[in-house]
Length: 238
Image (cartoon, rainbow, N blue to C red; front, side, top):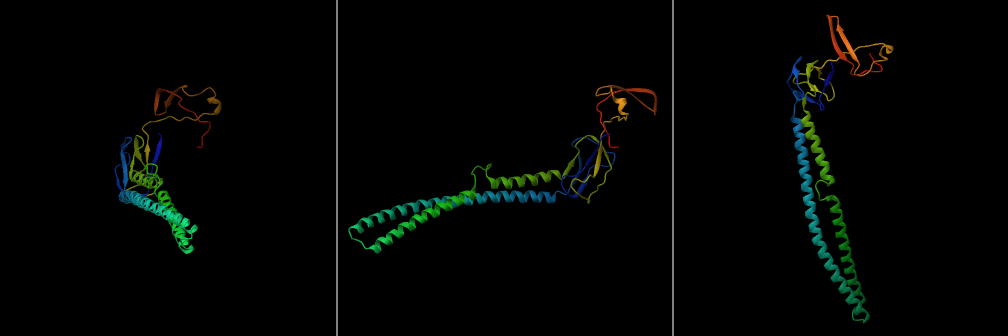
């Protein structure tokens, strides 16, 4: 019979055991479950982190909108300052304004241009922080969604179900025990039986898959059971 070791995929304290030795189970039956409290807490923490990331993006959107409004004002100011500077330049050629006044309006215009560049750089930086507006393509949100999915997956793994039909054997757990992930805590013995026979290599020369066979048991003298070969191994460890 095929024996399948059963272990939890996550570590935690056993909260309940729903089977006992020699229990017959079907695939999908609940075998045991771990205390789900820490796993639920991690799911809630991941949900909160994802929501906070969404709120942060909303704040960035508001900052971008405010910066864009400031940019419009700064662009208009820079244009007006440029017009003033051009006018002063013309007046300067007619010696109608002093060089000091011309330098002053030139500095004002240059400062306005620098303000425009600074606001544009700030908007660019905010957009980088914000990332894609499509939520499914936003890297930051994807990171927190992945963390949430992993937490939900671990919560689901706190309940261990039978992967195959069979009989419970070698049960080694009880409520309160700390179960370590990937450590076998029980075994499922398949209800399907196979006959394994060892022969010398020369005896298998004309034997292959689907070759007919006849099986007898010492405990059932006189009875012959029809069978066929399902597989063969080139060698065995033991």
